[in-house]
Image (cartoon, rainbow, N blue to C red; front, side, top):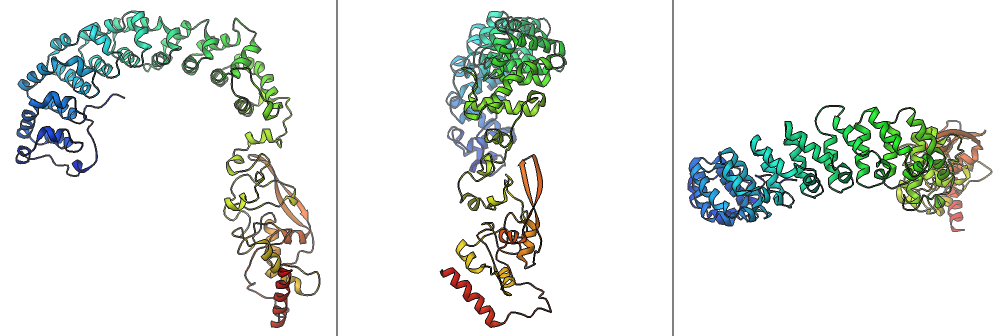
Length: 570
């Protein structure tokens, strides 16, 4: 980006006090030393513009003897720009003559170029255009236009010079196809050429555009020239842009080759978006009917190419009938062939997209345009397909089957509920929301502790007591938590059993089948004891005890605890 003329260092001690210096303070300043300081230079700039005429005159007079030294300084050049801007006429004349002897070398200097740009701007405003053009002749301007620092000076001249002088300058820079092509293919010259287009008017504008369009085929293939052509496509507010038609006509006969090149493919995409239907059909028809190969082979080559696939996708996006149907018809079989193969075998022609990217592209197109997958039987539970359709699975450490990638510790590390494979379904492949598994689902105890406190008995009145104190069970979910409910797969039914309620009949348990967003919820009937085993965690004592059931005696409680401790030791 072009540097700003008032772009001084910001922040630090110099910006703490925003007030300008007073006349008494300015008299005590060492102006050359302060101008080279990273922070105090901004104080001097602020004092020049806001400190009053006496302060500005004092700073300008003290900076003048050291002007050439400050122009080349990293921070001093900002003060010289302000001096050129605010100094009176006689002093500007002296500074202009001083810089005139070193104008060329300053324009090529990374810091001096800013002062030269300010000099060009002030020379035009102070009616010294003739003297400026004598210092910057045409041959020097042409060299500066292709220099990393000099092109800023040429751009400032194109912006600031009066219309009569601008015409002569544009004629010198890009008045012929050869000059326009050389300037457009240069890293810095392309920026100058775009400014020339914006500044031109009338006859010189038509001449510049003709010179650029004469080399369209070469420019679109160049790393920098393609930006000039894209600038023409987006030029002005007129829609449709007549220049787009001229660009497409200039590329006639080269569309297919250009679609598979890195820089020209960007231009073709831009043309497809901004052109009229008539011009858009010219591009698509030439892509479908290249001279070297039949349509089906041409589409296959374009579809799986690292650059051409973007042009093909944009063509599908904007095409209308009958071109849209032709693109679908010629690409359907190639896309389905890739989708039928396992991930490791999905291949593309040599020099094109990698196999993994090819498969991702085909999945994307098949989802966006369902007609591309007509007649294709896709098993969404297949791992090679599911990893593309479930965006959450890989993000949270799951494989295509929404399992934990063979790492049993990963659910606990991520804070996700564990899964009991005995349910015969897959867990959801995104982090569960708070309360998703019931009121439990926190930190769970170890398996040995759960077995010692949750051992169930098959007889006597200890069942209710064991259920009330039970935490995790071997057949239950391993991620049960503190509080009510707890457990993973049992849902509300498991929470009810954990509360001590007797489940005499089967319990309906929900499970998710498929992958987001194409999934369904089904319900299975499981025995109440299985549901009780799958849920549960550590829970508090029930608040309301049944009146007709006597409370457990102290001896019985101690006996139950002793039995549990014995089981743990065993």
